[in-house]
Image (cartoon, rainbow, N blue to C red; front, side, top):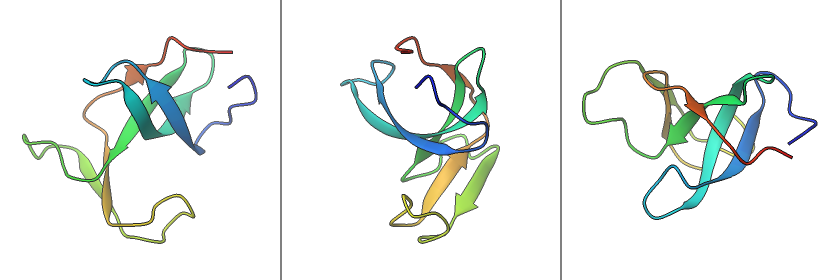
Length: 78
């Protein structure tokens, strides 16, 4: 991810989920490795979830939600 660009969407391998898996994520800070996740369903608390309609980006194949309630730092940075 050395060529990561602010605001771009990436598929990120993460161990921050159980089980570990690939997640769609949007880069919000390059130097600190901060991302917000894109989820199939909104978070249960329903706060700060931005609806993303299918096709709004070539990676978004079905209706999804950008979870602005949680910023995650991905440790696997290369």
